[in-house]
Image 1 (cartoon, rainbow, N blue to C red):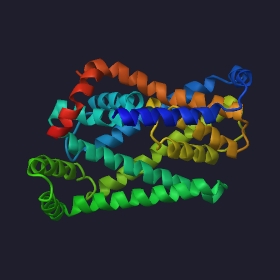
Image 2 (cartoon, rainbow, N blue to C red):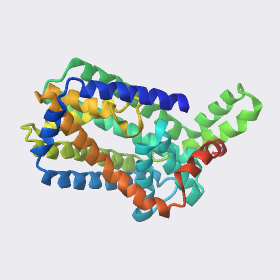
Image 3 (cartoon, helix red, strand yellow):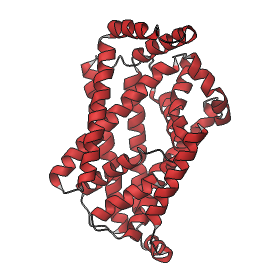
Image 4 (cartoon, rainbow, N blue to C red):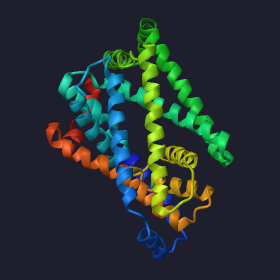
Length: 329
């Protein structure tokens, strides 16, 4: 884990340097002086809506394992998404499964499967948005090529997940056969983990619920694009909603890289790069990137911190127990 943290810090530092290179500090600060801060509140409102929708969508995916009322589900989601932003090496991804296990006894590997499904639908939705964008406006070939690669990987992963869920008994039989090749002491825990993981995929054979998740995913990502569009008005950018969606896709592709907590550096460089395609000067683009990152990130962190005392978990305790909990799953 320490190696992953170090690599993430190095990558973040590199991209942060690229984002700020050649920028005059006074010109950067001057941009904020003339920003219309009334739009900041609108962006926060949109992002709180996005957070609620993400929590609700995860509840739909999670229903095959356990059903939560929206209140407790929002609390768990808030702490989980906050942890993704503040913990290193993507450890925050395990917080939601950890909390579900603590509260409902569902194995972490089962809940992790629902999060994998969530991420796959996110990637597929982003690529659909990218396709719509490239039909309307011109983007550099590298963006399109990266999107095609991401789309291919996402579709491949989804196809495997659907096969595992639909052909459950066949898949488990083959997995048990493969596990005979590993040391005996690992066979039982790996088998238990495989069973639990496939249990977490059982939304996928349900076509009606899966299509509902698709619709929710589209609404979520269009709303994120809307937040970027609203902030254009704050900085006086004369850019369209379709360009805000393009910027959202570019940022989403950028933060796939390993990075420091909060995607510092990768987020900002991707945003500056995206705005440069639309003729925005680098100082203005960096000011916008800093503001958008803050407005999309801080409200979720604040919500997570507000709900954290009610979850009976401390982040140091999570670090200490994480490895043990994963092994027991």
